Amino acid sequence: MSGPQKTPAVLSVAGGFDPLAEKVSDVLRLARELGASQAEASASFGTGFSVNVRMREVETLQHQRDQGLGITVWFGNRKGSTSTSDLRPAAIEESVRKACTLARFGSEDAYAGLADASRMPTKVPDLDLYHPWDITPVAAIELATACEAAALDSDPRVSNSEGAALSVSEGLHVYGNSHGFIGGYPESNHSLSCAVVASADGLMETDYEYAVVRDPGDLPAAAIVGAEAGRRAAARLGGVKLETRAAPVLFPARVARGLIGSLLSAISGGALYRKASFLVDSLDTQVFASCMTIDERPHLHKALASAPFDAEGVATAERRLVEAGVLRGYMLSSYYARKLGMASTGNAGGAHNLVVQTTGESFAELVAKMDRGLVIADLMGSGINPVTGDYSRGASGFWVEHGKIQYPVTEITVAGNLKDMYRGVVGIGTDVDHRGAVLTGSILIDRMTIAGS
Image (cartoon, rainbow, N blue to C red; front, side, top):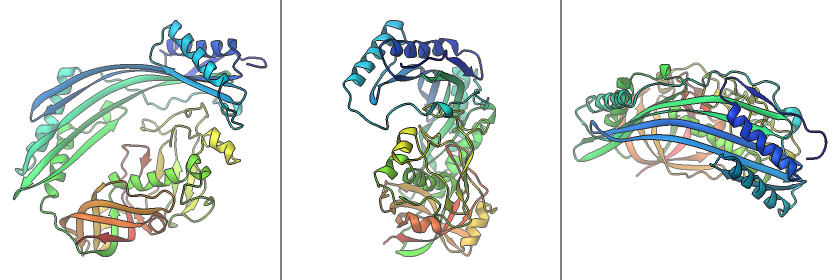
């Protein structure tokens, strides 16, 4: 690598990084010795186990131990990448040599290379992402069994189960590059889920509930998760078909984050560069209704999508993505930022906690506000055109009259265009779902086509 080389200083929030950091440092040293002008490496190590029970009997108990190392080198503007799960020195050296060979014979790309050195973090904040759980497999089986039992006992119509599962995992992540940056942090993820089947009059419906957290102390009681799965399945029995109509549609929080997910796809660098997005050239224009404001908050403690830096080592930072309905930013890695003549937004690898601000209504208040319309329970299929924004998905849910849920509905399609849907948002609930990278409450849209019989 040309020019003076910095000695990497490992930035981390806890101990245990030295072995992985050493692997990353070895990669960078070898790449330099082999003539690479730039290099980066990402190493990870994780352990955990999961248990599955079905109909009150243990089905599986699995332990996992994963490790990996991803390597990318550049010779000028030519790039080569390899990966390995073998972290022995000889295997690492072989992988670096292969990456260098690929780069030497690769095609030129003027936009290739590391993220700018000035974007590397000078410290790694402790985001409280690491909470190991010393639960035994026996205790985990008891929790999963109790979760499923609560679902099966919640309603006499809950007659069968697809099972309950508890998963425990923890790991380390270290990233480094030839700018002299090596940083790492530990993280943990623990989840509990249950899916059951309700039946009546020869008809069956399936639904589920789950929880996923960093800290096991934040998991809801197993009985609460199971009972909610049972309640949801039983509530869907007796669904009727609707005649085709136009009406307000309420997306509960657990499905509303999919609407924001479509926004993320539309404002990603790759889609914008290829002109494969319905939001091309939409920066600083009104995309949503004025009641919609979205912030990216990558440093929320314990949040599932928190990270001190992105997949390229770019330091993450809070920013406003949508302000009173106006789009204020894109989601860019360094590569596509260069192609678009812009700067990285620290989103290589994805979004970091998009927080949709609420308009202050509870779920019940949003139901009352729409007066007559549809509450979505589940969406099926992937009928979204990313270029035009056309939206059409199979759905089931509940019909609302006079501000109250009246009965379940099934075999319908909800359709519209995302541009119109986003501008038609009239309420965002206080019932925020924290189980992913998008933190939003229920979203009420003023009008969509509901296709039925």
